Length: 328
Image 1 (cartoon, rainbow, N blue to C red):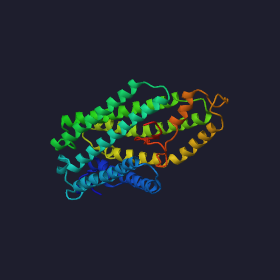
Image 2 (cartoon, helix red, strand yellow):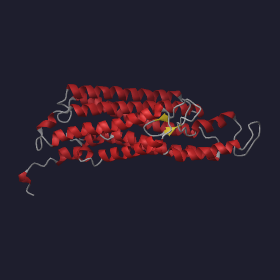
Image 3 (spheres, helix red, strand yellow):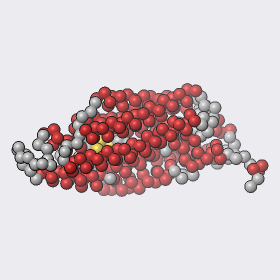
Image 4 (tube, helix red, strand yellow):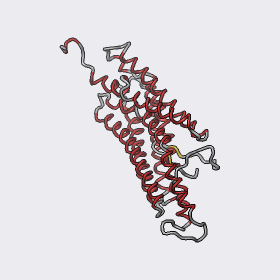
C-alpha cells in the first residue's frame, strides 16, 4: 500500500495495541487470572481474610482491564487517525495508575511481613527488612505523586512529558524495582539460613527458594523494563505496555501460588510424618536434629494452607510472588 494514502502511526499506537488495545497481552493475563480464580474459590477452605485478598486481586485485575480498555477505545475509535487526543491522558489511565500503586504497595508490605516471619525461623537482619519496608514506602509515595501529577498535568504524560510526572514516575518504578530485587534476594538468604539438616525439610526449602526466584525475577524484570523503556525512549510509548500489565502480573502470580499449595501440602505431610516417627524426649536419629530451634524451623517453613479447619488463627502470608507459612 502506498504510504501517501495515510500516516504510519505504528510507533505511536503499537505499544498501546500490543499491550492493551488488542488484548493480546493484558487480557491474556486477565483471562489466566479468571481461570485461576475459578479453580480457587469453589474448592477453597481458606479463612475469610485470604478470600478477601484473593477477591480484591481479581476485582482489581478486572477493573484495571476495563479502565485501560476504555482509554484505548477513546484514542483509537472516536479519534481514529488523530494525534491530538494523545496530548492529554484520560482519567481512566490515571485511576489505573492509582490502582497499580495500591496493589504494588500492599504486595510489597506483605512480603516485608513474610520476611520477618521467615527470619524468626532462621538467621536474618532486621536492618534488611527495615530497608525493604522503607523502599516500598518510597515507591508508594512516588506512585501517589505520579497519580497526582497525572490528574493535575494531564497534558504532560503521553506527549511533552511534564518534568514532575517524569520524576515521580521514575521514583515510583525505580524504588519498586529495587524493593523487589532486595526482597527476593533477602528471602532466598533467609530461607537458606533456616536449613535444619533434615533432607525432607531442606528439599522443601529448596523448592521455596526456586519459587521465590522465579516469581521475583519475573516481577523485577517487568519493573526494570518499565523504567528503562520510560527513560530510554522519552518520545515513544513503549513503557505503556509494561505499565498496564504490572497489576495483572501480580494478580496472576498470586493465584498461581494459591492453587499450587496442594503440591507443597503433600510434601509438608511427608515431613510431619517423618517427625512423628520418633519420640519427643531425647531420642536421636541421624536425619532428625534434636535441637529445639531446628525442629521449630520445620513448622515455621512449612506451607500453611490457611484452612478454616486449622486450630490456628493465623493467616498465611500472601505476597506478590509466593505463599509461605509463618507465624503471623
